[in-house]
Each structure stands twice: as structure tokens, then as C-alpha cells.
Image (cartoon, rainbow, N blue to C red; front, side):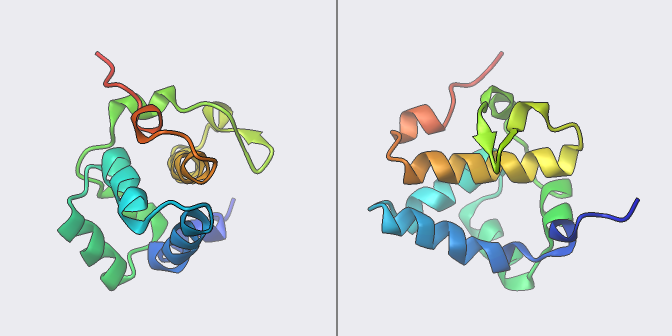
Length: 119
């Protein structure tokens, strides 16, 4: 089965849409970056580098320094699909990031978006 086209899409192509979505709702680029760093373990400098290199989503998640173990606490619908039910690992990570940006745009507090650390 061929890979979904999002896997080969540069994160840098979607990133401005995340920012725009957040800013339309009064949130900031800084908050979007914090969410992405929390999810992936990238530092701000590393995040900016992968955006500049136009790293694709599959590589972005495969090379993430430390996927946050608390990301498994992310639940809910994104594009009509429950994120916790997505079996394909890369797609699940992409949808986790989408869900966190949605929560930010919906006005959820950062303390709730950035789930508490699991054991």
C-alpha cells in the first residue's frame, strides 16, 4: 500500500497553517512552537532547522529527539477520526499534533494541552 501523501509533505508547508489557525483565535506562534516542542522533544533551534530544511513529516517524527510519553493521553476527534484509535504510528503522531493545535485554537489552557507527565 502506498504511503499517505502527508508523510512526504514538508512540515514547513503545514506549519504556517498551524500558526494562522492559532492566531485567528488570539493565540501565538510561541504557543504553537511550545506544543510542538512538548510533543516531539525538539528544541526551538532544532525545530527551526527542520522547518528550514523542509523535513517531511515521516522523518520529522522518526528523528524526533523524545516523543513525549504523555502524548498517549491525547484523546478526541480530528477530521472525524478518534486520534487514540489510529493504528498507523506516523499518522497517529501527525494527528496528535493536529489535535493539540486544535485545542490551542479552541482556547484551552496550555496547562491542559500539555498533559501532565505519565509515569
